[in-house]
Image 1 (tube, rainbow, N blue to C red):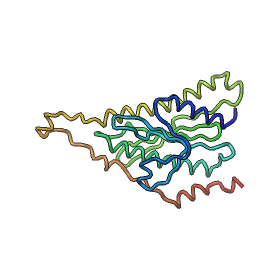
Image 2: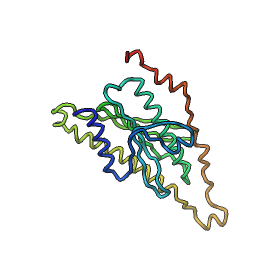
Image 3: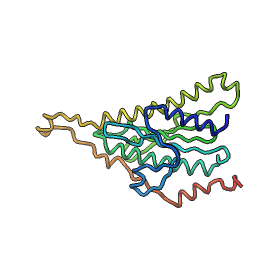
Image 4: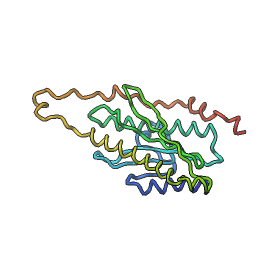
Length: 218
């Protein structure tokens, strides 16, 4: 199957999920507000108790464009955008945002890596690789469950999104005891701003990232 068809399969799968997704160089609203012109190939928008929020993003590259420079420049954009998502979600919570994980989907040709970005302490973000899946290339890969592994991978992405939405919906509710509030004994609210760090876009870093491996492409 052609790489373009593998890409289409992922898009068709996500279109059947209960979350809205947009394709084709779209810009996240919060990034616009921060003057970050990140155009991404894929965005997931989820409906929550507080309205629609961006919950995940992804980048695609054809086999011919699968170079080191393309990979790292796309990954940088995706991570910084995910940090925008995470900061925005965390600011709407009543408690600490440790459980929130923003999935990042990186597809090159027929190979896909999925990462998650989370906030584990004050100002400490962690990026973890969640899974690596590939579209089966050969008949024996299909016979050994290659398609099932691919669908299981898509399901992992959906589970990550669902978990983050559930955490966001649960912790965005004000569950303070009314009597405690009147008596002045309610728990001290977490200062979320002390947990977050701003998204900083350095054009020089991006240029250096984009230039990486240019000699290999020539």
